[in-house]
Length: 116
Length: 112
Image (cartoon, rainbow over all chains, first blue to last red; front, side, top):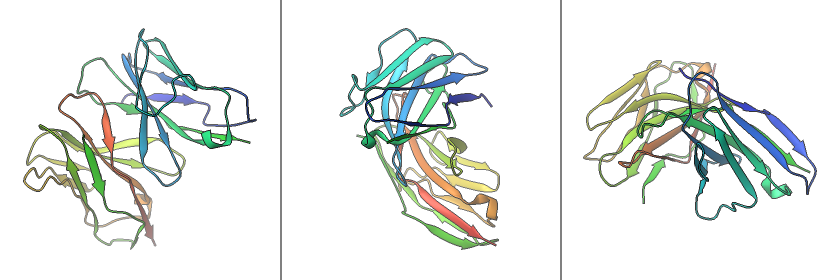
């Protein structure tokens, strides 16, 4: 199957700093990428949907100025957590699919963010 | 809106036991249904899927049947292995076909 790679796998940062997480589709063009957040022992919550070259669509309750999403190319999307705080500590997972609605989305391995 | 409800875990089993994880859904139209598996520290992997009523998805010994009359998509495996220990997520993709809605996840622990 198609491969989606996230980097870094884990990151520790200080409160107030910003952290960038990359999501790459390695062997297909990802017109659409999704960013999820997963709290410990909980399900995935969709944060935003991004289409290449367009502004991301954020889910209700997600601060777009805090979680900046860029999807500038067909193989790369980035999530930047700005001015991170301990409550932003979480497992962030991206998924990507081609442009056709209904096609399978492939998931990255996730990034564990710890803000100290 | 769309929602998925699955049984809470953890589910602890002995090797070779029978596994069932219940999943029910609420959605308009005719959603596609999925089971994903998440191993410790990793992202999600698609385990199986079904796109229409009465379809049976199967993979690696796991099966689930799309039951529209009961709005269910229960996951079963006849004989689990220690390597099946993971968190299992039931999910649906609505008729609009854009995003996935996940259940809460069920942690399964298989002991030797």
